[in-house]
Image 1 (spheres, one colour):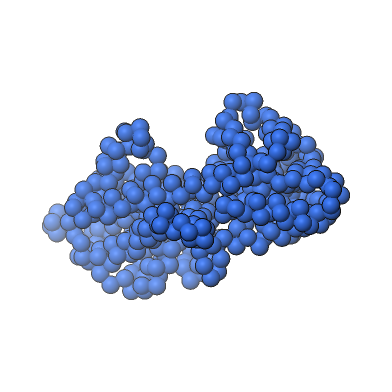
Image 2: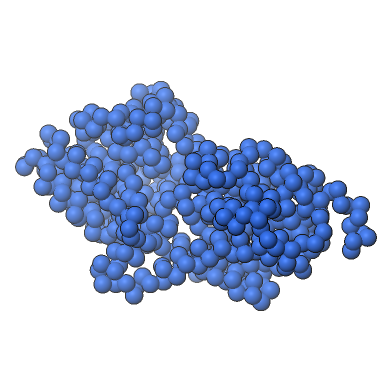
Length: 464
């Protein structure tokens, strides 16, 4: 098939490359030449495992190309995928649909034949039907252009896998020809036995926002349990393991810590709440507001814990491990790690941030912070190390070697992802969210009175 993809951000670039890998001819279109330039060379403009190889193969095969010309894209495609962003409104919780509406209108005004326009952007329920009307109103009469909805379920860090081997496909359609086109387009995927749900436009929109809402609720639930555990000296990890054995609950996404972030989950649940209020269903979705509040409280909890350990934060050197909102991504949008780092800085701390991939993006988002590409340089002289993004590299750190460069061996594991027994054995005092502390000064909840660096090792017995 000849396919045009509008928007070459995270969703659009991966989708375009994936469609080319399935054997289709694809043109990706974006108004940003700074984004198109690398893509034309087969280079990924952001970090995503497996994407550079997928892009380069597509470009080299001739099946994948990119343009800044919407005229070229509209003329080329028989199927048009809308993959532009739907950010949160500046003055409210709702989704800003200007970009989606503009793309559909631009496509409609340039059409000279019957095509299928397919939305993939995450939108409030009811948007697709409005866009179908927009397509009809702006296209030349009699062309028969149709609109369908095909929500995306990409996980950053696994987007290539989720595109080529998704766990399900959802087609929101209004007629059989639209369904047949989508089935033909995704034939290589469907032949592997992937479940396919064919439904109306509204249900297809709801599948995406309902999935994100449930994930946000599950994460916030276990973080609320972490708050309880902190109050009663319980262990939220053991709690999660135990309740996760129940097949009705499951263990996945029951990881307590500093909470969720990124460009989707938070803004999507807020947009869902806003749409619910418009539909007179504010009470039905009120639980999402509390999930959002629990999530934000976990960021404050890290700062409060740092204050209880160090006392006055002003002038203290704090190393933050992680800036991206999750591992295997350089995305810092609504990153809990960066939010905590900024709050520590606002409290007067000297904050040094390390991240394997996202330092460039983090520096643009938070230029007030200091950044280092080397972990040991970032940790040198630190009064406190705060682990906030669960990169595999941090799990592989040698706590004894890192202990040689810090001012005191004091750790907050904001993701409950490090081997705290190994860190404790190396002389670190480890504080985890929702778990009892371990290490030489585990019972200390105000400013740590003695340095725990390697330089003080010889005095440890006398001090104790």
